[in-house]
Image (cartoon, rainbow, N blue to C red; front, side):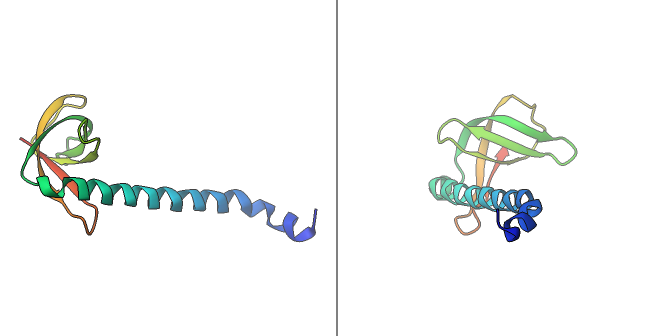
Length: 104
């Protein structure tokens, strides 16, 4: 094995981890944009979904819709983790990819 390869082997795991993180961020960004594009015409409408995360101190979390299959930010009144809720789509920004629902 050439010396220049051996000299860089210690850095390989770190480099691979950084590449994976960049790749994951890129994929998540694309998914966010597609979700915003699909939902943009439906701002103001209500959707049924399941609360998959909830931070009680901030009154926010995440909702998972079945149709369309979207996971997005959820705000509003207290929601129980795992409960099915009706939520209004309040934001679907196709520029930033931000999608947000509010518990009704």
